[in-house]
Image (tube, rainbow, N blue to C red; front, side, top):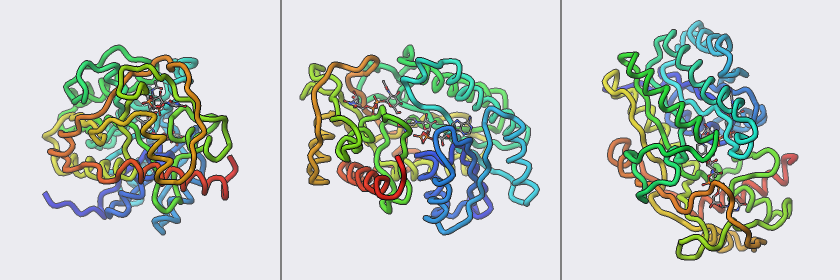
Length: 353
Ligand code: NAD
Ligand code: UD1
């Protein structure tokens, strides 16, 4: 089926956030009309302004909360009244701090699972049948077979955050079973890193970052203590944990492919999960080494104890995305790390931390 992208209006929830803003840029560049929604619980309006400047367009934005059905109805209605009914949704809006989720499990459930359920109800009310969902490789827990593929079972979740991703996926599958014609891609991201090469948008973590690359960049910028390598005695080639780091621009492009896949498949598809990763595992020490090589900067670091809840090693079998979405990563680790560092420097120059 041939689709005219200009007439496809894609709602991006969590559009002011890290992955949402990069995806919005990729969608606009691919010719879609894009509408952003965010409640700024982990972002602010400057991200919207920066992405608008990058695409040189007044991308519509709604300050709205996915937990609030009337907020969502307002967004869907306003777009309809302007003659651009929403055709598909990419749902990024969620809280994602693993440590915080342990302290506030109810908040995570209400926000992530409740927000997804309200969104599904409103989509149904407006006859919107296509949903791209932001899931995570965390749904696999400590997977038995590495590289992990999509048939790997959900193991008991390591954190309330991980539980919310499993619960959302299950709600979406149930919704599809009840609503003939509804279809969804469940995108299980591995470890996104990097920023737009222009350094106009990137990740702006609030407070002390938990994730490796943002912390590493802030440690190099001397905004934090030296990086602690969590664990040196794992059964890996150098004793540190292994993950699959993919560039956020590659990830953004996967969302464009995923929404096109859904819209082209029409009402015949149901739900389909996809791993989004490079297919290669890299250790924490290799990340440090590559960062030093591409930036010429030393990474101040020390060796520490294992972090509770960390899996030893996980990387993606991303064959399904390659075969069915026609997507694979193209940007090497070094480029992701360099783009993260360039963004960090820009943050230091232009924005208050
Ligand atoms: P982010 O925090 O930068 O973006 C999420 C955005 O959603 C934020 O702007 C936040 O303000 C907004 N938001 C949160 N709850 C909301 C609500 N109830 N209503 C409206 N807006 C709300 O995070 P991100 O890294 O861009 O992650 C996007 C999605 O990808 C999340 O669902 C996250 O769980 C998932 N994910 C992220 C990673 C990662 O490493 N970044 C890995 C796997 C999965
Ligand atoms: C973490 C979350 C995961 C979530 C993902 C994206 C945990 C247990 N898992 O994944 O649920 O989907 O973020 O938000 O929190 N590391 C250090 N020093 C640091 C920080 C990290 O050595 O200061 C190591 C970690 O031990 C890990 C690797 O770097 O081996 C990557 O860590 P991180 O960026 O937090 O991602 P994940 O643990 O894969």
